[in-house]
Length: 468
Image 1 (cartoon, rainbow, N blue to C red):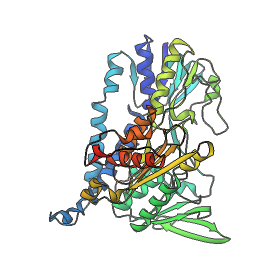
Image 2 (cartoon, rainbow, N blue to C red; image 1 turned 180 degrees about the vertical axis):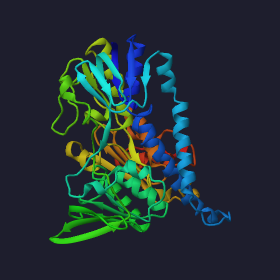
Image 3 (cartoon, rainbow, N blue to C red; image 1 turned 120 degrees about the vertical axis):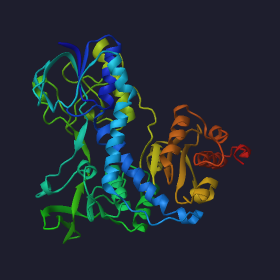
Image 4 (tube, rainbow, N blue to C red; image 1 turned 60 degrees about the vertical axis):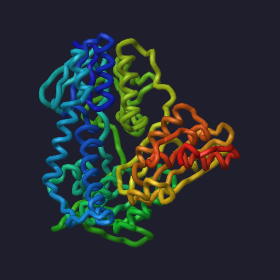
């Protein structure tokens, strides 16, 4: 029997394994697929490869503006997929986390198939592996949410889209969240005719209103069909050429067809095959594993971390969860998850968007705020590079002068918000951010400019001498 048995090798599971092993526990890690979980094998890593290819095609079309003569770019999709597989292998091969796991002597069982409890301390896998753990940490992540709609079996998930071996002529995407937008943006750039449907009044419902409006406008300007508040889906049907979606809107029944229909309407815990009841583990009403502030489940010897808990479904907090769960599994319930720090998040779409902290609407519920924006067409680097669409927006507390939220649309949006997250984590006043001598001309420089604008609105004297 192992002291600690970790199920799932995504960010949470890997860190939980490392933490338990470095505390001296005899530790095993078992995963249904390859080391790295969804993040390395089906999520950010392979998706970023496709997004980079889409970016390269856009950049290639700019070359003529800079005196570089080339023919129209053409995509070799098979070669792109090969590159994606190579990147995934390289990331896995050179992973410092895997090296740490091996150096600490933890046992790793990859590609073992789905695991399930046979009793509170025993786990069996589809491949026939049987493992016992005094303490068990669940890090199985999540899967795409399914809809109870007739014909749903004819639809595909975002994972299916990433695994396509050829480009579909047309694609219907249901779901205007981060995942749906990445699928839409990438395949639109590759030449697929994309129609994006969102049942809510706007796409990106959790982002700042201005961000959502800017992204929707940019998508439409590029030729993509974006249908917000489209109504209610009645069914999906198989057709000779693909899939048909039947929906009702305003009392009228309508239909739309495409070669492929991708549904990306949420993320649920991947626990269906775990047989949680056999271990005495309870779920929340939403289907996630129920945990306390120590990430302990209803079974005292079982902990859970990452997406499977439904707390904050992003890689950085999953890493933090893994550390907490690994610590508590060995030392007992001594470490709490604590207050979440500002977590930057965004989408590698065209254009990019990102945020950290509160939206303006949410901030106004509890704070007296000052809001400032600077548009990309008024900064030097964006003009140089021909990426003048977008803006950087700060939401600042009027009393403390601290940044409550940063929202960016445009080139390098994700990188810009990383710097804002550092400032927020350090509780910097906005006027202090404006004085940081960021390099010129860079994309990140816009953060100092918008900070200076916010400071002026707070009647604070600032100098932009450091920024030219």
